[in-house]
Image 1 (cartoon, rainbow, N blue to C red):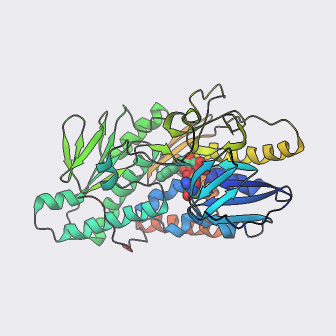
Image 2: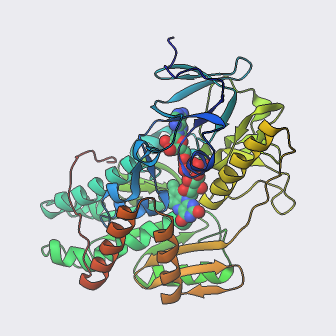
Image 3: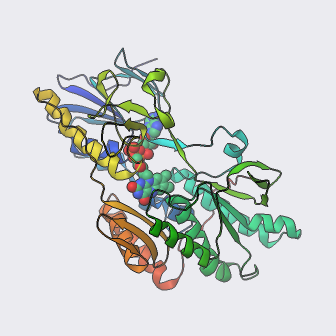
Length: 428
Ligand SMILES: Cc1cc2nc3c(=O)[nH]c(=O)nc-3n(C[C@H](O)[C@H](O)[C@H](O)COP(=O)(O)OP(=O)(O)OC[C@H]3O[C@@H](n4cnc5c(N)ncnc54)[C@H](O)[C@@H]3O)c2cc1C
């Protein structure tokens, strides 16, 4: 295969796979005086995953949570972006194999994140709607809106109910947030836009395998999230698992089945996969094993950061760090400094995660926050959640658009973007 055309210079070349939270933090911080940087991503934009659920529930336009890489790095010297999918890592040869050609590197940084885990169930993979990318969030929005349109003229009551049943699998932050957002659509939007549907027509189920929602947060946060969602009319099944989908019914492990056209799958992730990686470099969840400096086991010039890496050196995280944005960002920033230290022959600094807490929102004035010294719920937690997310979105224009949308939605009880742009529903 041909090579990707990047000029060869005297500088060391860093190839970064993935411009998510980790890759972007690294690429932003690394000094182009010292290195040539090539960022490869299969999308030409960075996506702000924490707000995907608002795109899926017609609250925000996809462009307000996406930011083009070329614009972000316009002013960076000796920086190259290539839109391509990396397939193979030829670590011994110092080469990555991509969909548009091969590229050699001095240092490789794998920051490719994770993908949805369907636990090997092919039927569920084909039918269910995941929510890991902007495209998937848009497919979900289209599907939800199309189902409402179809339900209006459906004369068979069973089929109609199935069109109006939504089953969400996974009671982590994403499942809780999308359940809350759809339930707000049901309360505020459906009566206005679909007056000929009954007020309580839409039924939302949230299925979680463990004993509580938001398993990684405090008991208090889990309890509050459960209470909020129950009050909002979401039917919650704890300690139940979805095992299959057959003839329009979602099958649960206890033999129960729910008729539902829309199955939203946010129940777990698995690391992105590359060919030619030896099995002893892979840990649980398909994550690549690294040392305290994020170096791939036995390979000093290959670094792995963010969700895709598994670092077990830190005493408080013996099973690896949580797969959240701050870990990826902090690892990316530290790696930028460590690569410069490497160039100067200084010793590297090990990674130590600074955990500032966890947040999840359920809906209007309803959120939960486990901060370092403070636990909040309700309106205050919701304000904190909004400020934290606004601060983190890339681009001043995006911050403004998101803020205006939120204020508009808050005042009018309306969501502004209920368009069906592409008809690609999944399911029965
Ligand atoms: C719906 C949702 C909500 C979330 N909410 C929160 C939250 O509220 N707070 C929080 O802290 N975390 C949240 N997370 C988790 C957070 O988004 C991740 O921890 C974070 O994105 C990890 O960053 P990363 O850099 O490792 O990978 P990512 O941000 O996932 O970036 C990976 C990048 O690699 C690219 N890529 C992947 N494979 C290839 C390939 N083969 N070739 C080329 N490019 C490739 C992708 O296009 C992507 O740009 C959420 C995640 C999701 C899905």
